[in-house]
Image 1: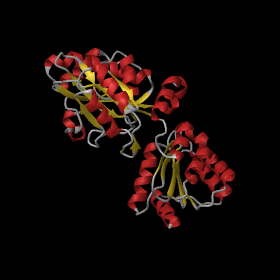
Image 2: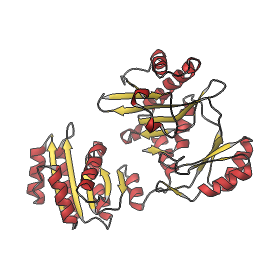
Image 3: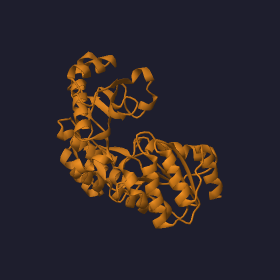
Image 4: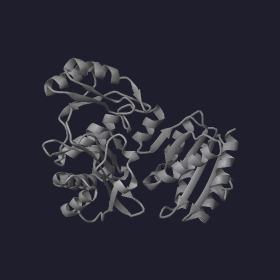
Length: 376
């Protein structure tokens, strides 16, 4: 679940993090009223679940309520990165001495959280050299000690007088990550103000969908903020807790895990095909194989279906059982292609072969080529 900026900032503020004063507006008049209340220069920021809004024209500044009204008029109803802008965050513009970058994310390689920090942040953070993006693997069972945070900041060569404020901000960021079962909490930029405070000027918060039952209120808020974003099929999937994105291709994709799904889409593109969707049924989502398949097939552009399962700790035979039951219920008219590897693959291949009459391909490349050919 990707939360929009103001939801993430509310979570930060509840944890004692410094965020700019402001409010959310769904009309130009409401934006002007917020600017009038703040009585200072304001930033108006399109509330969409996507980054790079600044480069996409999604952040504007206004010096008075009339200018704020005009800026909101420009943003509201526009489309940025494929998302319709229905709300804007109007907040006090904050002067700063330095822009930093800070994030905590799930790191599969380290089998735990990883902290990223750089004393160089802002819109071009992707261009920061690797040796200036400092990383620290953490033990999820332990809190993030203030002294460890100080060491991370010092290693980034931030000004000595900023170390304490930034270190305390990093500790608070880790508290937010752990307390909310986040997959990612990113602040870019995390700024240091002339008064020496560390302030979050942006927040990207990605929640672990499997933790929904532990954070029902936060998930409900994040979903309400997203509103009617996306296509009808994307909204249906979101309501079911499925990760789905509708694309413009003709090869439907079902795979377990976001990484494998994206890899499958890349291989489809490599061989000259076009994926019709992103749909992953890893984790507990394999129990939703029937609604997942129904959503994928509801896209009229889908002309073939590629199912790619790779089991490490996940059992491919359990996932294959779910898909076989879904196929029996839905009886798809498009040709289906399978490739299966990993834990339980012998049983999974037997299910697909015996119940669906389909022989899985030994390699993903061959399966992708077959799916592209079938779509044509």
